[in-house]
Image (cartoon, rainbow, N blue to C red; front, side):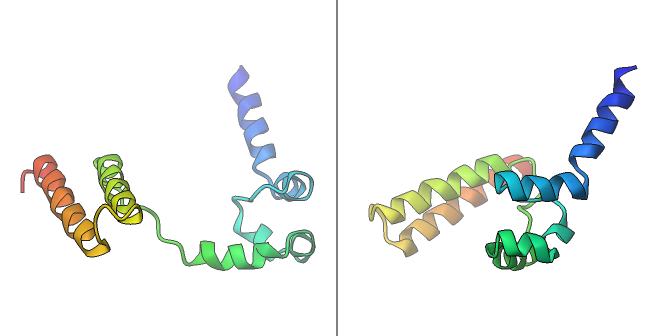
Amino acid sequence: EKIPAAVKFARYHASYKIQKLSVKIAGRDASMRAIYYDPEVLKWNPHFAWLRDVLEHTRWRPATPIWPELSDIMAKYLHKAMIKELTPEEANKEMAKEARRAVKEYWGE
C-alpha cells in the first residue's frame, strides 16, 4: 500500500519542475539533461553551460567488480606522485603493475 505512494513521491522529486526548482532554490545540480539547456536555469547558473559540456563528454567509470580496488590503487600512486615520493613516471609504472596484478588475481588471467 505504501509502494504506490513512494513511487509517486520519487517521480515527483525527479520531475523537471522539481529539479528546476531545486536548481533555483538550492543551487543543486540536476540529473535531467534538459535542465542544462533551460534558458531560465542558465540565467540563474551560467556555469551550467560549462557543466553541461563537461557532462556531455564524461565517460562512466568501468563496470567491473574490482573497480573499488583499482580506484584505490590509482589513488595511492597519484598521491605518491603528488607528494613527490615517486616521479609521475615511476608512479604510473608501479600503478600499472599493481593494477595488472589485481586484475590477474580476480580474473585469473
